[in-house]
Image 1: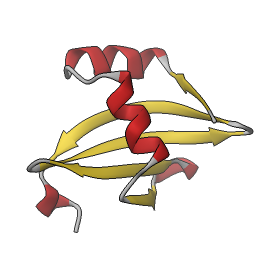
Image 2 (image 1 turned 120 degrees about the vertical axis):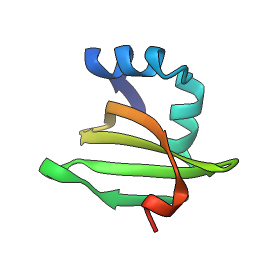
Image 3 (image 1 turned 90 degrees about the horizontal axis):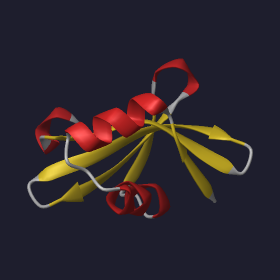
Image 4 (image 1 turned 180 degrees about the horizontal axis):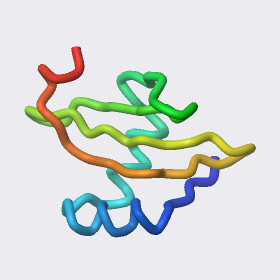
Length: 77
């Protein structure tokens, strides 16, 4: 599966100190995939005390990453 990043995602990933390998790990081996807004999906994986959430769109044989961020697990039970 090909993984693409929007310009917005590139900025947010860098600002939040995330690596593309972390994001790709969540997309290829998530704990859960949830339905998001506007037809998007949210892949999430527990890493340590936090959940890494990756908002993405499926487009043919590619995932387009919209944004990614860490959150506290109790927000998304």
